[in-house]
Image 1 (cartoon, one colour):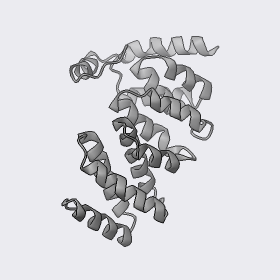
Image 2 (cartoon, rainbow, N blue to C red; image 1 turned 30 degrees about the vertical axis):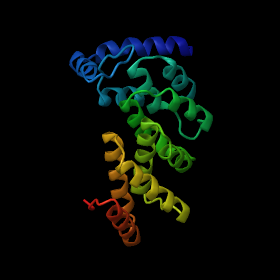
Image 3 (spheres, rainbow, N blue to C red; image 1 turned 180 degrees about the horizontal axis):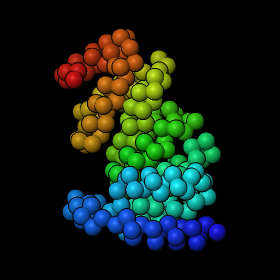
Image 4 (cartoon, rainbow, N blue to C red; image 1 turned 60 degrees about the horizontal axis):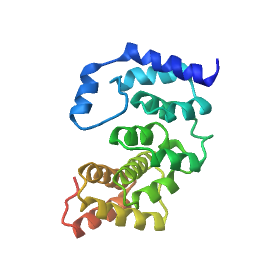
Amino acid sequence: MDINSQVKDIKQSFRQMMDGAIAKSMRDKGVDYKLNWGATLPRLKEKATELGKNYDLAIALWKENVRECKLLATMIMPADEVLPEVIDIWMEQTDTQEIAEQAAFNLYQYLPYAPEKAYSWMASEKELYQLCGFHVLSRLFMNKQEPNERGINEFIDQAMAALQGDSLPVRKAAMSCVQRFAELGLVYERLAKSALKTINLDFL
C-alpha cells in the first residue's frame, strides 16, 4: 500500500477513536487544531504499535494538520533515522503544548543528538521550544545522563531564568527538570539547592 493510501486509512481509523468530550474540552481551552478527533493517547499508542516504526509514514502524517496525525507521527518516527534538520522543521511547525510535550516524550528524548537539541531549545525565546528542552533534559537526567561542566552551568542559568519567567508550563517543566538534575547525586543536589536559593525558591 502506498503512503497516501496508508495515511487515508489511518485518518479513517480515527473515527472509531473519536471522543467528542476530549475534542470539545480542548477547543474550550483554546487549543485549535484544523481537525481533532479527541482520540486518547492510549488508543493512539495502540495504533502506533500496530503500525511499527516508519520514517516515510511519520513524515507524511506530520504534514497533515490533524492532531492525531501529528501525535502518531511522533510515536512512529524512528529516532535513529531522523535528521536534525527534520526535527528543526517539526519544532517550527509545533504550535500546541500537547504536541510539544508528546514529541519530547515519544521521540526527542531518544534522538542520538537529544542533549544538543535540548540545550539549544532551552535557550530559545519561544515558550514551546523551552518546554521541549526542559522535558527532554528531564528524561535524560532520569536516565542518569550526567551533563558536563559547561552543560551544568548552562542548564542552571537557563532553568533559573525560566523559573522567573511568565510561562507557567515552562516554569513547571523547569522545576521538574531541576528535581531530576538533583537526583543525579549529592553534588548535583547541592548545586540545585544553592541555585534555587539565589532566586529565593526552596527545593521541593
